[in-house]
Length: 222
Ligand SMILES: [Fe+2]
Image 1: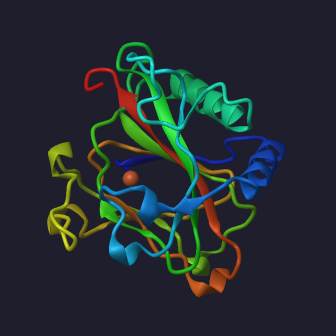
Image 2: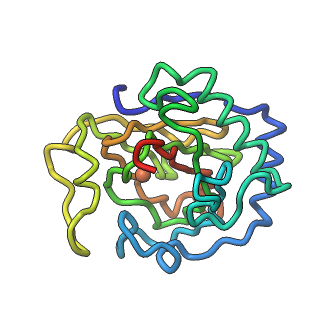
């Protein structure tokens, strides 16, 4: 798969469980009300998001709009530290590039997809890459919520789809791969790779798709 890197069993199962229990108590708000920019669309349903966390102060001394900056003295900290360690130890030869040169910080937040919510096709804005980690305890294929990854790429300048009914260029997402949100799986997505989350189905019932997703800040683009 060109556009994504999959890391199974990213954390110890006990660590995933700690994150899960913590996020059960986290305060989520409607993503549509909180995030006013694409890719969230009217047809994406009522997905929920937690607060944004920055891995460290960014050079201007703020969290780049994040609501919390590590250390947060919550389980977000060990998750953020593990992601940082993994990117430094195992991803330097990839699109993410070299720590301290190409990137130094990242930001992430929790996402909770309830039945009939998903995320439409898009590419992420300017960054060194994106990641998603699946925190829920169980996932089955017919519950939906798959991450689809297009076999193609687009310039980042095309990430802003135009208007409410903006269209992703058809040639960028007419074929590709899917990744199930298996518990304890971490996925990295290459910049410029079209991707979406298929809606969670009613078969999932009250088992929401719970993830931590983020973006790696590029040092060159700030
Ligand atoms: Fe994305």
